[in-house]
Amino acid sequence: MESARLFDGLELHSKVTTVEGDSALIGRKTPEAYSLDLEIKIRVPKPAQSLEEVALADPLLVSTLPGIKEDFPKAKVSNFYYGLYQLKVDAVNRALGHLDQIVSRHNFFDCNTILELIDAKTNRKALLIQSDMDVNADGSDADRYTVVDGSFANFQPFTSYRWLKKTNKLSQFAPEREEKLKQLQAEYDAKTTSADKKKILREQLEQTQRELSDLKKYSFLIAKVDPYVVLPGFMLRQPNHPFLPKLGDYVVVMNRGKLYPAILGDVGPSYKIGEASLRICVQLDPHSTAYIRPASDLNITYIVFPGSADAPPGPPDLKKMHDRCAALLSDIGGYAGELCEWEDLLAKPSPSPEPQESSPSSASQSSSPPPELSPTGSPSPKSTSSPSPSVTKGN
Image (tube, rainbow, N blue to C red; front, side):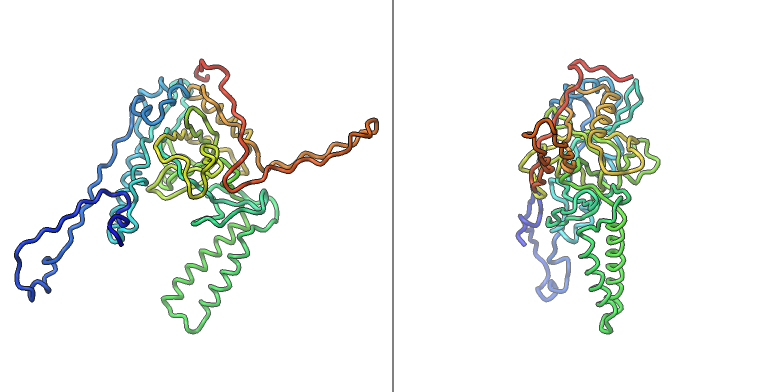
């Protein structure tokens, strides 16, 4: 493999150093006589902490969230930030034996900061994360939408956020797992299957059975329909952390002075951050697909509100999502930008009106169907601005 392809984004400096050694007879048997010393040098980035540093990535941050200026002097860099970069270094170390799998430059430098904010008047807590935005195309829900495009590489019909199914509709992804179970079981039962192979097959059987059970029991978010973001798994596994995010917590995504309501809907690898559902990505950039991200720069701000999730979990209520995010923003000083009002792409058509006897010409017309869900686009949502440009803190 070419070294330029092998080292994904790493600056590569190489040279050959020679010294006089022993005879070839001895040199062939001496490991140190022909060796490669591999050292990866990483400058771990310091977090943006001041308002000026954060504004370098998002110049409209302060004008969009004017009240945040009062909370910034007491903002603290979260240990989530330091934990994230330690996990990145650990991932690089693990890949030293498989250099084609090393963390890319893009994924290593994907977080500008993670700050912990507490509003002085409302005591509302918020995590401010600055990152890029990769695309999440996962999820399925036979109760709400029966046909989901699962052809993307690494697609999973599940999301971490889930709720009990409300109908007996079978997931389109269940039959293939039922067939896989039969094939795995047949191979496991074959007399020619070795003990080592049986151990691998047993793990595959258990995993496939769990997936099938989940598909029959739960509904999940749908990336093309539901606005949600993804956080690294380790952030949700800190039970005593005062800013612990949980699945279902409300999140506001900010970009170029516009705000997008969302929920925390999925968990990703612990060494990466900056990811959102295809629904959000397409809104930021209509050219986004499962393979094309809307933002490679660290100019996306995610405001996560720990402890804001509704119980019990269920399919997203987009109107409620908008209103809750507006209220949560008010708790940290309000907003002066546009807060997106998502259109419900799965809304059922309204009942046809009854014909009027007094007006024979007004025949009953069928309602138009819900907007078609194209692979890369969705109808533009409405936006609401804050009540006035001069925003005051909530009570």
